[in-house]
Image (cartoon, rainbow, N blue to C red; front, top):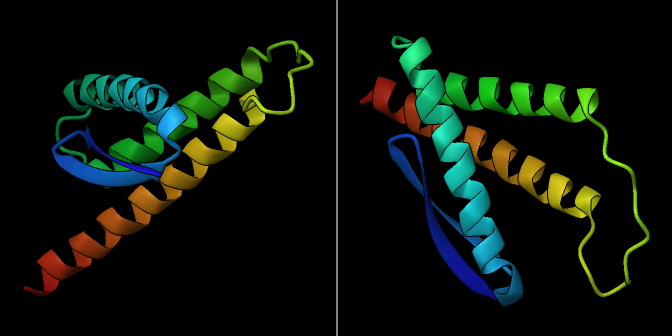
Length: 108
């Protein structure tokens, strides 16, 4: 297992992944970071958690609008759905983490 530190917006997150998926995770995180940063210019006064949710919603909308044909993949390779599920789970974890930080900051 590898641990990768990724930057999304102004925050950094440590995510564990398979060694073979490290580069893919870094590339995906860079794309998400670019999306969040682009949104931050449009929504200047929205907190980072909301930007992450908006990013996730726009990605979901794009996935639904542009479904890719499913190809048969070898069992040892990770499929699109697996990647989607992993990204979705990590987005939920990131949102939960940001929400907890936000509460701590407000209580400080």
